[in-house]
Each structure stands twice: as C-alpha cells, then as structure tokens.
Amino acid sequence: MPTDIARIETDRAERFLKQFCDHARAMGVSAEREQSQGVVVFPDGRCTLTADATALLVQIEATDDQALRRIRDIVTRDFQRFGGRTPLAVAWSHRPRSWVAPAVAVGVLIAIAVHAGLAGAALRRGWTVPLLVAVLAAVAVKLVALLVVRRKTGRFGHHRPTAHG
Image (cartoon, rainbow, N blue to C red):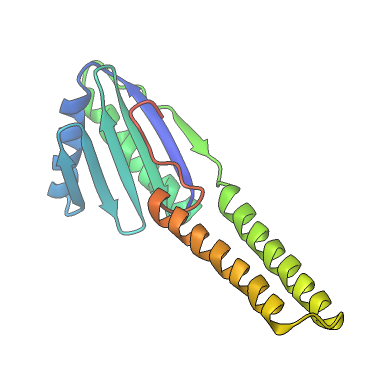
C-alpha cells in the first residue's frame, strides 16, 4: 500500500486530532479516537494519527497512488483550515513500499528449491525414504517458524507508526 507521512508541529496536537476525528464523523467517515491516537477509515485508505506534546504524526495508507493523493489533499486542507490564523504546516514525505515482504518470499522460494534439490539428489543416489521425510520435515518446521514469527510481529515489511516515526 502506498504510504505518506506528515509531522505537524503544534503544542495542541490532541486538540487537532479530536477535531479531525469529529469532523470526519460529521462527514460520514468512520473515525475512532482514544486519547492521543486516532484512526479515520476512508473507503480506499486509512489515516492514522498520533499526538504527542510537540506534534501530530499523520500517516496515510491507501489502496493506490490516486487514492493516496486524494486522502492527502483532504487531510492537508482540513488541518490548514483547523489552524485558523496560525496555519499548520503539513509537509508530507512518501514512504516507499517495503522490500522486506518480497525479499522474504524470494528467500522462502529459494529455500524450498534447495531442499527439493537435496531431496532429489538423495533419491538419485539411492538414499532411503526416511532421509527424504527428514528433509521435508525440515522444510515444514521452517515454514511453521516463519508463520509464528509473522503472527507475532504482524505483516511482513509494514512499519507500525509511533509518535516519533
């Protein structure tokens, strides 16, 4: 998913977070807020907000680049308007798509190919079926370990936003 991030410097971050979430709800968009965290869900993306003492961190994830631009424009206009006489500076930076998930997928495919090659070589040399079962069991253990790591850490390659980026 394409992602953009902005850090809006303000000592009233929680106020603006609340205002944005309330405004989104009034416009018929799903919005949730708990203290210094908020999430606004658009039909084609989501905006995650985190307030701290000095800034409001805004992260947008969208289904495609066009949706990202549209949501970014909405968010920018709203915060500039909310700032009133002291306009809020909203400067976006684009977070490139992560290479981690594709790299892990390639690694898994290479590992499977290596193990399949070893199993084939073992069978050609007349090694026994129990050795083949051992190689396949090793592949299964590695795949299960990979799934456990994925479940504990979340989806591969996705940054979980914090107040400091």
